[in-house]
Image (cartoon, rainbow, N blue to C red; front, side, top):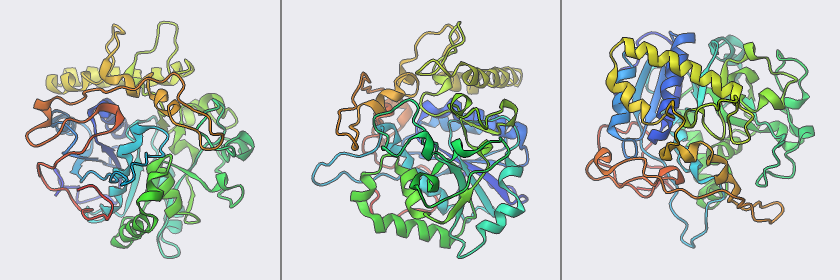
Length: 419
């Protein structure tokens, strides 16, 4: 059962996931800005009671008095450790929780006809709903056998020359680079395969028991060994499951922050509907006095936009006497004095360090770089509650035991899920 009943009216909703408090500020601001620009479309916040402290859950309850959000607990989805000790192939261990995103396909009994996934590190700057929930998109989603979704292409330019990227990741193979106008939509093509690959930060689908079973069957078909080898866990899996079964949404619904300087061929500030704060998160550090932000100091403008919205949210909640909410969220957002918040390092400047420590399978070179490993105690024993094991910060959670705090919704019983 969900914490709150979905509205009786309205066929569309957005959905996201929170498994750890380090993304709390991002998710709160996602709900706040979505309500501002698409007030009649709720945001379903799925969360894992096993790993998210009660204080963060309470923050969502408090925010729900002002933003159109619905809380819904789900079971954490993790792959079991390999019997032979084989390590994960993912680019960064912080992606380990993203398998739980697949729970969204089990939300077919909440009363919504269309659901649009949005990552918790996104912010809304104009109403995305007309670009996502429309008759044209609906005609595609209901076509064929209905096992379809819509998303935005993966940008494969790799202008930062990340060592983990495949050799095919270059501008001439990027669907975004082929566009000449901000109003154009990229085309899905078979060759090169990069033109048939989507980013899973935003995707829309029509929930149903049939679609849930389709995703589950693909998950079990691939099996633990192939799933563990995936660099971007949920994204690689969804591309495998929906190969030739997807069409494109406007880039405006999943505008990666790097596109502001990578894809000037399409980027117009006022055209952005959903801004995706990939890699380091803006709430982890304030913009410096010289206007720079981001791990390469290129993202001062877009990070500044996030902080502008945060200050508006903060002032509104102060006026509404939401002192408890402000205190909780404030623990997971950078302070004004610029002091480093140790709990935020792995979603801030340390985020790209996670990627650098993984070996590139294309060139065989060690991609460790200068990235440090962090064991960050994001949840205290007191916050975690009885029967829970403390998570291991942004390196991913260790094994946890459920305290059965509330229903988990559908989705139990995936064959390779940790119990």
